Image 1 (tube, rainbow over the protein chains, first blue to last red):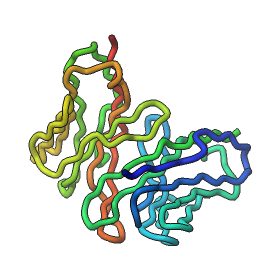
Image 2: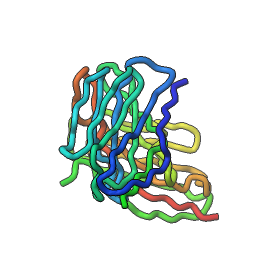
Image 3: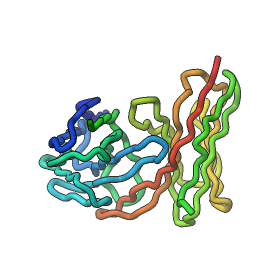
Length: 114
Length: 115
């Protein structure tokens, strides 16, 4: 069966520090991969998605970036964190076929910026 | 008007009650509907998904879709304290590269089932 792993589960970082969040998927090949941010009471905001290695689409302009160095690895990064980057970050995957496929989420990283 | 509207609650019910959670949507092109359950400090977990209008049942859960009214519901029978969570609806939205769709999510309804 397929599993998705995100780490770390919680992270406290000072303003201006760099960020690297990692997500890996097991048990499937060539998945679509997604990064979301979830703010309290504001729903899920799609940040990035990827349909293949090295292919990244950005949905929201910001100081975050994403990379997909391997088929089942998705990384969210920042060179300098802002206070507004605090939130709950979720990685998700879906089967990469035409049409509708449900997304499956990891357990998220709670990021606090001080 | 948001594409997907969902009452944030909280909805508080006694154990054993039948729970009805609802979403409305405005885009008639939506054709694929999902419900997720999210416990506190966890990621959303897929509960049910369906393409068609009508009912789909899985154990204590029933998903209902009315495309003519642009209205979907999730019913939970014999609700348990362990059902206390936030429930998010989602429906197929933006077409992305490769022919897959990115879902549009509701903001979630917080459900509390008290013993």
